[in-house]
Image (cartoon, rainbow, N blue to C red; front, side, top):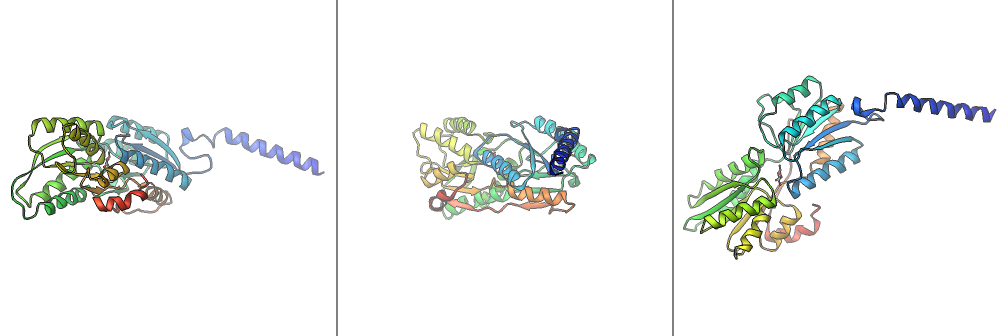
Length: 327
Ligand code: AHR
């Protein structure tokens, strides 16, 4: 009797696995995970900086920890790749789409397609300039204008009461990207309070170390007196440091350097005196993103704008913080 019962149980298990194989478990077509997991499609900008690498890791680790199935697509810095990835997520019927837009403009059509398909979209890190804000449910990320203001305020304080023109060169982030537009604006608005502070050169270095170095080389060749470098991220600042040293100058002393991000390499250079001030931009958005995804999936309404908490670092503060830096 016992033997007959166990044979029947094994048979039932085999039958149910065979049925699952006929449909329910195919998450490439339905988008729903094999065991009713939430499926999140995420389109990342690329791997242009240390910040981005840390951001990708945070999203991947947090999805795993939250039991969310992540479909991850790297756009390699191209908007067209992001649009293709979002369309593919719509076809796969994922539960939620999140993405960090390479640039601010040109998203309305694809966001409308997601909305029409009933798939909520969450913006992470960077915003879009769509007038119709119903095209996304929430935007999680930093206030980039505020970051630019913090960078500018440090400089204003450094030169308070001093005379003489201060020549500033600026390495902008990717042209058309929210952090490049906003960090430039916040900085320019703030230093306008001191007429001695002048941005004499401003050019994109695309948020990469290599381009930061190349553009700084041209700045050094064309501008005899550079007092300050403002780089929109650590990576471009670190590339520029190589160019400054190769030109026989001392970064942090001959040329004051302000950057944004506070990744480990940037904090190391700050603690060594090669950078003077860093405005933090946190890449650790993963845990908050997964919370929003769960909230949206269970019918909740997340806050439309969720700001990341951030600070600033002087050289002394960097020495204390460096051993605890995760990224
Ligand atoms: O959008 C965030 C910015 O993108 C980071 O400051 C920069 O390092 C990255 O490439």
